[in-house]
Amino acid sequence: MRKFFGSAILPGVRKLRPQTRDNSASARGHQTVASILEAARDALVEEGYPGLTMRNIARRAGITLGNLSYYYAKRDDLLHDLLEAVIQGYVEDFDRIAENVERSSEERLEDMIRFVIGDLATKETTGFFPALWGLAAHNEVAAREMNYVYGVEREAFARVIEGMRPDLSKKDREILALFISASIEGHTMFIGHGRDRAADGQAIANVATHSFLSLVRSIDAATIRGLTPAAGTSRRSSARKSPGARSAKPAG
Image (tube, rainbow, N blue to C red; front, side, top):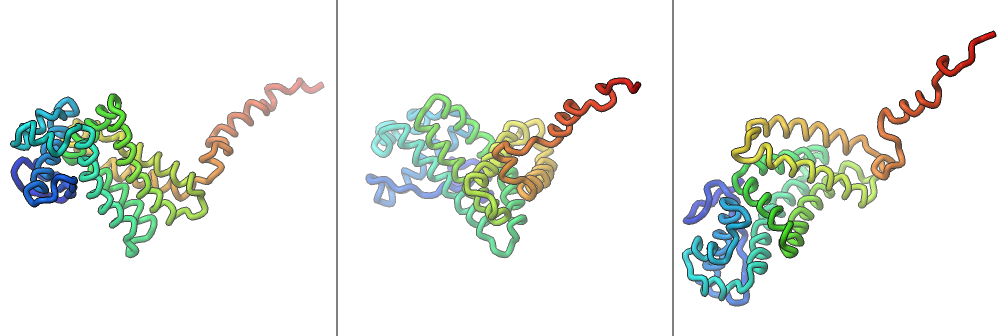
């Protein structure tokens, strides 16, 4: 993760991409908006979504509540800009990986997997995104923004998968991307920053890389759509249909 050192910024977190509002055209206004978004990000990381109140954000940003309201009259508008500022940095990283022509398609998929799992270990990701999940359960705007954020990640995975499996349909590649993304993100609570199994992050990345590469290489459209019996199912079915000597009548 890139580091940005400055006041009120958590060490080692991703620098937020600048956001411009209609009333922040001046240099001072631009800086105030940046300070507000940094304060909101830090509140989510350190306190969870209960800390994302306008009063708390104003206090963290070192401004009055009235000044905050001048730039962001609604918390939903602030949340939208915050997520835009966060996701733009990820878009740049995803594009860098997905469009790296010096790496094969399989190597790019491995790079994506290891990047996303490595990102789980940062304090920002461990605090920010689970807080967003909680907020999304009660806030329609947060839910919409969360879907957008993870949609960006899934789209990047689908692009890389297309390089490996151009024979699959767009829908099938999207299903694989959803499965991989959701499987990785679910590890946040276990191997994230400060979690009990954080030390196992590298091993998890190794297992995930092996598993997901094997999956993408071998799966076919019929399996994705449920048209092919799962491994072992046909054998068990055959065993039930062909009991052999057990059901045969005694000779003679």
